[in-house]
Length: 115
Length: 110
Image 1 (cartoon, rainbow over the protein chains, first blue to last red):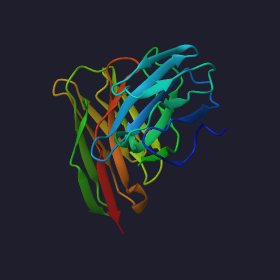
Image 2: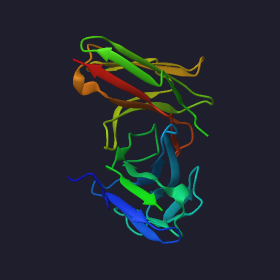
Image 3: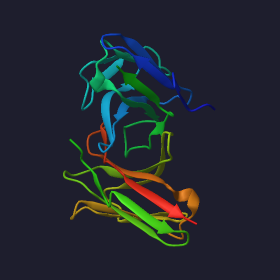
Image 4: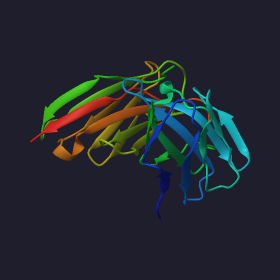
């Protein structure tokens, strides 16, 4: 059981470039999400998905796209990278958001630098 | 905007001492969760406490929740060097939108 796997671990982009951050989970979790972590600001929710084919925006969605074609995968696309998107990105999944809540399982993050 | 805010921002203690950190939030919640993050790693879930619960224990961890004051506390008893990490509270007030605070950095020295 690998849990939540994020690739790449590190990435450097030039302003204006696009890229996709990959996230895969092997726990058959319904719910998947993307957060960014910046110093002193905690984690902020970018996008989330409650199941295959369903996505929704979080707190800071601008500049990012997501899709959920399978239960396992939830890629995050940066359309045109900007220095403000320099951050550490975490993918997280949980069994279900229905009922009384369930804990998030996190990947180890992708550290992105935009120059 | 952050829902949960941890206090203190940083905490330095010696091995064997207890560490207490607090979390305040602004709106009603379904549940509150605590996570630990070691340097360079993802967050690891510690405890989930539901809005109708007042206290939960897990090993050396004790979490309290006071919904009237919109606050929670995390107590780590008999701290070890391995407890050195950042600790985050996260509030679940809208299914699918778990909101995290900025965290408390805890350093435990031998």
